Image 1 (spheres, helix red, strand yellow):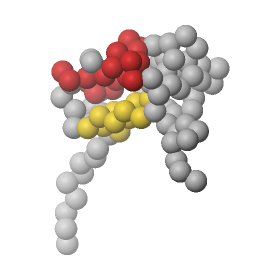
Image 2 (image 1 turned 180 degrees about the horizontal axis):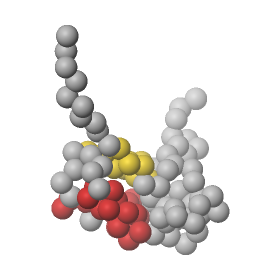
Image 3 (image 1 turned 60 degrees about the horizontal axis):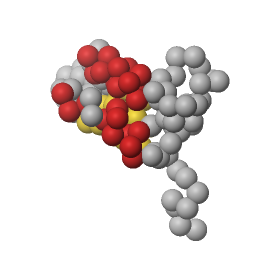
Image 4 (image 1 turned 90 degrees about the vertical axis):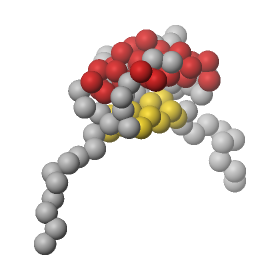
Length: 96
């Protein structure tokens, strides 16, 4: 019989993909809020951070690389196993 090591991988989706501030007052929307909550999640044990950028003006999801670069700059110092940056699906992204 194989014994379980009782190990887990904790993944944290800091922003969600389609959420907006009207759905929760706790949703981080600025690059600094996203970076701060990502760092807190990693310090609390998250091994995977799954992030979507937000338009800092209104909190809507954005594919703008400049916004991604603002919060992703804080991540290299983190000792985490995996980071994912997503922009979600936008018209024209998927053929067909």
